Amino acid sequence: METAELKEKLKSQIILFLNLTDLTPADIKDNEPLFGDGLGLDSIDSLELIVLLKREYGIDIKDPKVGRKVLVDVNTMAEYIQQNGKV
Image (cartoon, rainbow, N blue to C red; front, side):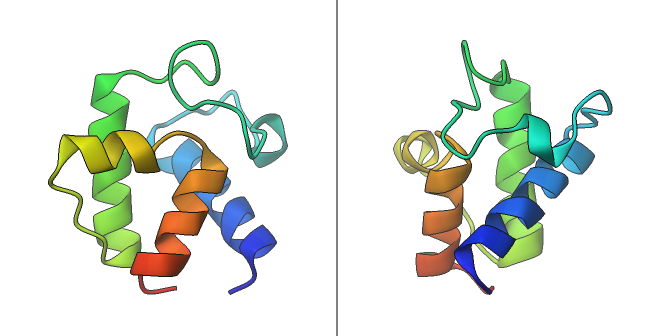
């Protein structure tokens, strides 16, 4: 899967999994932080994103340090999926 295609798919999945019904994929920038001042996600959302990675891409993140590095923005998630997941 092309990187751009994966990023668009990820944005749609984030919206679906986190029930962010007021957003569209176009509202999420590839380099926008997912937490804090960016998209404003919280720790519960991070757990949902970890479930998304496991269910959709076969990636099991158990180490919180790895999770913090992967769940920075759409770019870092896509890169990690391409390197470690089933795309």
